[in-house]
Length: 266
Image (cartoon, rainbow, N blue to C red; front, side, top):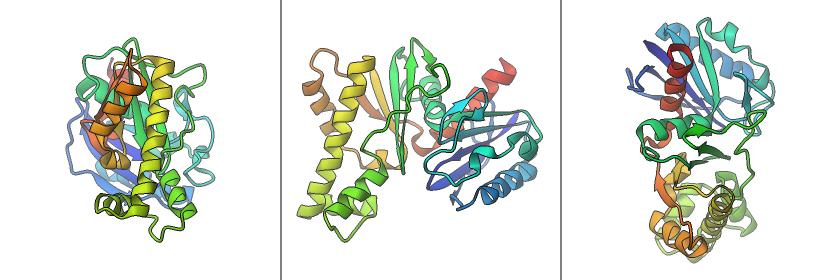
């Protein structure tokens, strides 16, 4: 089976053809997210028409309920929530929240294997959280489980830089300057890291998980040694292990394809 998988976020759209076991059949394509919903629709329709898949799996920012977006995602253009995916694709399709899709990939084949209770935290333009509870994705009554606002997104890091009147607001450049010893960059990054630690501590106190996997582009700027040492102090009785997602920025694509197989093939 060939599944055309998409991961749609505020900064970029990734897509590739994947088999039902989660193996890539072509290189992942990554393009900046357009400014209008119509442009996003054109990209999706063209990619699917070109690849002629058996099905389509979409990992997307926003709350997803009963295979549709429940409302407009904060980081995507107006009208995106109204796209008719059935008309766009013309084949069996599945839509899932991007963090949930990423968590499922890591649970089935990546960093969250052999756990029963775990978290996937995506760090990108915005943040997303997915919960594995007793070996199952926790969706909640309307698909919004895990949709917690946390101050450690890429947007949050850029705002910290702006408020400090730092001339650079690119997240990776802030990180690289912090590593190079720039005092202001170090203070900004340290505040962002502190926000991340406090957020992970609160989530663990609420959910008591074995492992937290971090995915998304900003997972590459996390100091995992620092995070795990701090969480051992903050959560002395039940410290979770924080790890990078095995599939990194491809988690959403793989997880969406695996969820498609589960829904349509059993």
